[in-house]
Length: 117
Length: 148
Image 1 (cartoon, rainbow over the protein chains, first blue to last red):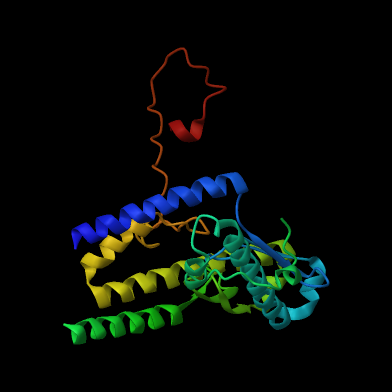
Image 2 (tube, helix red, strand yellow):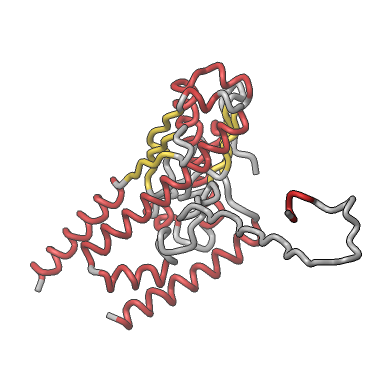
């Protein structure tokens, strides 16, 4: 069992290094999405919590329920954009099927999410 | 042997399903925001207290961001706990050695300075300066209340 774990750890470290070198070249991988009226903007990381949630002063008029629902909606879009960008960035060093299985599929409609390279 | 392997595969699939379904709900320390998030940082629900909106747009964004992080950390920790329950502490520690520490084991990232555990002790009483009998002392500048 220890050998298996050590082997798995070695493999993880090797992939981690390849990914790390790749990401160093490409820059941080995030996804960004926003409401059509700019009320809420979210910067998300793939597989992690939102990095930044920004609310415009005008958005406060939506009320607590409306604003909360909009934050959830935009955060989901931002994370999908982040996942898609991660997939695109790493598909050269990691099997794309593995990336999809890990929960980072490539979304065909990412442009709708306002992703900016 | 094949039946044992089949059982293991089913158990792994069951564990994966359970891990995917895990969420955690956390309230911000200020009590004005509650977030339900998955271990992958997906926000499943956000609840804003009406009073939070009175703190301004910047504060709303900051508080929701902090609460989302806390909820995600809690969901990741719950996943580690569930995994340890299914696979044993030894395997959970092995996983941690590969993926990094579970959130509650690694350094805490409080969003507000933690309150002191006990009430702060009152400042030590200053000892009154000892009265020195000085025959040359100028009585005009002395404090009669402290001396007599």
